[in-house]
Image (cartoon, rainbow, N blue to C red; front, top):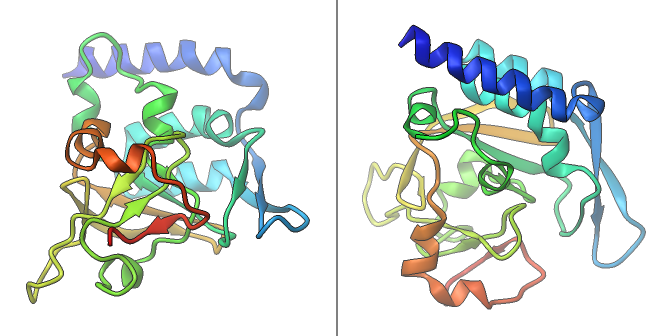
Length: 208
């Protein structure tokens, strides 16, 4: 286990050198509210990383510290929201990557949604019914709400992955929740292929 962790840290260090010019501190993302003058969402990468580390999500903390500015830099999103939501898997799933310990940027993009998804929203059958589409920072690859709202104690889930910890971080601009595993893009591609071609100005779309 120690050697595996060392390899992860070593590869992460190499990766961090590649993105070092844009690492750390505050960054921002431009959002276009109904095609009006774009506004800026301020994102404090260091605080997000620290909150994840304090909550025990060390691997995701390290990954976002070096990669989050790359994930969101030079991005303009057409949205009615001024908040982004990040879903953070725990440390164990990071070790399932056979050829690298640092997940690719595209996978991290798939875990960031350009909209506010708080506990109330994701537990609400009206706001996010089963089968709803959630846009992500990975173009053309949305998430799918899989919460079974018809059960009394339904656990909120996305792409079949349970949300395990709410509000690891929330500063009004960025919300971070913990999830049980990485989201698999194949889930949406196989079970909801029509979302590949759907187009909507909203970031959460009901499957109706």
